[in-house]
Length: 100
Image 1: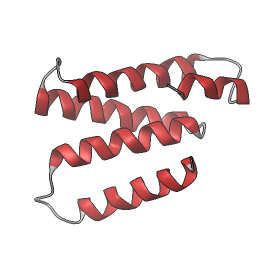
Image 2: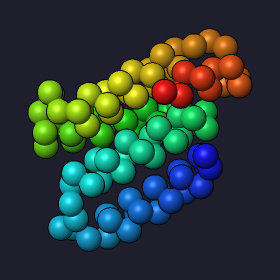
Image 3: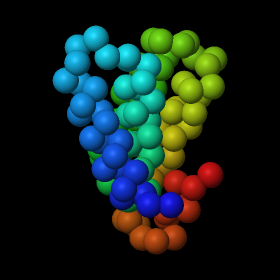
Image 4: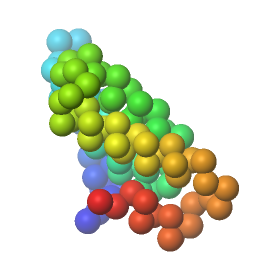
């Protein structure tokens, strides 16, 4: 799919949500997870990891450790950590780490 388009749309949605103090926190956590995944696929490791770490923390607070959304965000955050630890840098072959 269009990963760049998905990242742009997720970022725009999060920015709009943050303009409303009473927005749904669970939707924001899911949005951070989606944006983090997309940025990871684009090789933007630092921001991806930051977003995914925040998503895991929020989802743990909202749902607990055993919820599927928490586990899913944690799994993607682990992939971000593995990628960031790679000394090879962003090359096309490493993009496979971000795919299911």
